[in-house]
Amino acid sequence: MVYGYDLSLLQEVSQRAEEVYEKIMQDTGLYSFIDVGSLRPWELYPVALYANREEYLQKTRMPEWSQGALLGNAIHTFPGAHLSSTLAHEMSHLIFHEFMRQGLSGVAAGRLRWLNEGLAMYEELQFLAPAERSRVQAQKQASLKSEGLSFEKMRTFEPQSEEGRLVHLWYLQVESVVRFLVERGGRLGFSIFLKELRSSKTLDQVLPSAFPGKWSDLTSLEATWRASL
Ligand SMILES: [Zn+2]
Image 1 (cartoon, helix red, strand yellow):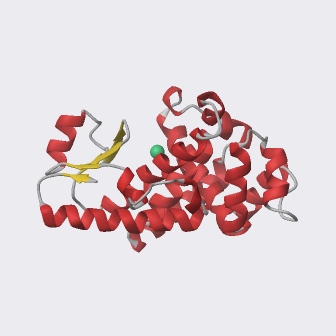
Image 2 (tube, helix red, strand yellow):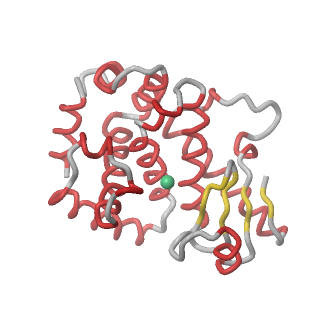
């Protein structure tokens, strides 16, 4: 469902949302978990499209740099080159919340913030223009190699209470770790990983059963991820 002023633009946004949804489903293997009746699944996620950036900032009161936001269950954004990547980021969050909500308490799901944000960043990057994506990747690789956080720090990180430079680094790192899990571990394994985490198992339990022969626990994941940088 897309709300806004310009009909042809709204149709374009619907189509983009559908492409984004398909990509997230391919990466996570979560096709079967949402029962939507006759709706296309992405139609569950309302998109409010403002006329332009000024109107978006004024009505949502988001900070200057913001290109999109989740308010309640709706994605608020405005037309522009960022549209697909913003939809990808915010739809990933909605799908992750919906999926985890069916198994975990809010507190338990909060412990997976790194995974939630990492998936959203991973999908966002997939929809950036190639030149922009290469620029981000290069920057990411360099800073993670020299100052990447320990997994312990990454997992307990609370962006609201940290300084800006570290928050930026954390976003780059969680994206990199999710990319590593999906691309090195394989999409099937990643799908099992998500499903088992939802049943309250620990990361040390879930990693070897989702990715047999690849990672025996979190320590081995951390070591191989770091070596890949
Ligand atoms: Zn996010």
